[in-house]
Length: 377
Image (cartoon, rainbow, N blue to C red; front, side):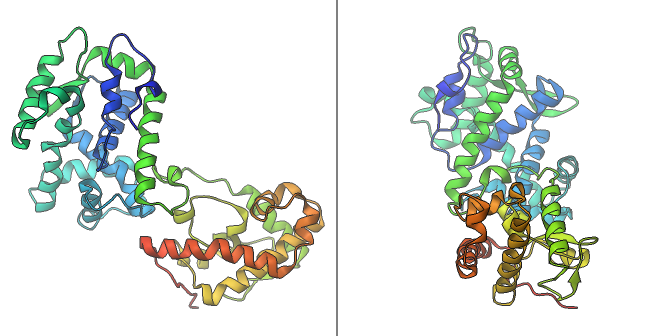
């Protein structure tokens, strides 16, 4: 999508050219390059930004979608391929912080390895091809090997264009080496409209990722590292259910779980579903929850016990009239009230939950999540 009407208007900068950047996008680098620039504007208010730092930020921003959420970026995408390769060499965890990744990648780019050279190679096209829409008419018909040099030259010339200044030009500094310098009028525009421009960038990125992951749920929740989650309502639900049922058997180990001590497990891993809906959460103990981690449990071994436990818990919570704790189930089962939920036959309850979970497990398997996990004492 390259509709400039979605960006705030400006008499000072050519926003139609910024919007045109996302036309015909076949790789993710445009989204992540702009996102990295916007983050630097937000964090540091700098006009001169080292290109190495922006490349490292790009890799850090791709890290979670690739490693934690296992999203596909398409066969042609270079950055995601690099991110997949780099983890084993840098020895960072899937949930490493952005600052850790930026620091590690910035340092790693200096070591001269083949992978470090592949990362550095991003500098040979990303900063230049991103600006191509600013000079589209001038570059029409130009052979590919001449494009970068021409963009470098035209960006410098257009930087001083009073009518339509280029977003940035390329500079060399003694302290930071190859850098970009953001035009002051563009910097002012981005500072004033930062939330809208960032939202526009992310909206386009979500569309790109959705095209490459057509059946994956909650793409918009998988762009960044997950925020700290609040499971208070789930804990209230299961504490109430455990009390009413006088404890339940853990579906994995068979041990009795009581209201005073239990851990909450996402049956389908949170890193796949990226939500905390009640119908996917059950109690277990801390050790089992940790051992299961982001693995998908065996449906053959655990799906029937899972849906039976969910049914029993819903009946127990419904019996005391806690509608606020049953909203997720009312929506899933398309019921109008607790009474309808209570009167649902167990076979219907199980079938709906099975039909919801089974396809998601297959998609998770296709994405590379470990499946068929089972508990071993």
